Length: 118
Length: 112
Image (cartoon, rainbow over all chains, first blue to last red; front, side, top):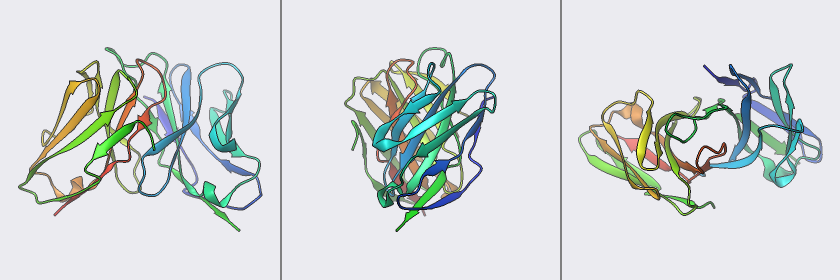
């Protein structure tokens, strides 16, 4: 069964500093990997995904993530954090192939609360 | 916010009530999903519909009953819920067999 681990419940960073939110995964085959962000009282918002190709994936709002197959990691990064980046971040994984009959099944991590301070 | 809307945004119901949550997507997607989000727990996938057919039921109690009348609408019918069912219920949609899902804002449900 596929699984995702986000080892940090909270990450604190000063505005202007680089940020990293960690994610490791476990799947039996090749993974599709995703990052989502959730602001208070809102749904999850898609940030970026890795399916194949370049290990460095660029997404929305200046975020990027690096896929590392040997370490089974997909860490989210941003070179310079903003106070407005403060939110809950979720990593998710899907096995290639999807569900029989269509659709796909994502497994989410428990989330990491990012706090960016002035 | 996104092309996925959910109503109501907040719902308080007693354990003997019957209510329904509604989700509508305006993205032309083929698959729709219900998730439950509780504090300090991973998102729990409840149901998946693809082309209006249920393709996944993740061992959800029968007091939750989904309905997908067409590819744009998804309902979650609720009856005789328990206090532990209080949570944020999120609806999502995706293109056929594509990875990313697009989420609605959620319905905050409180069972008293």
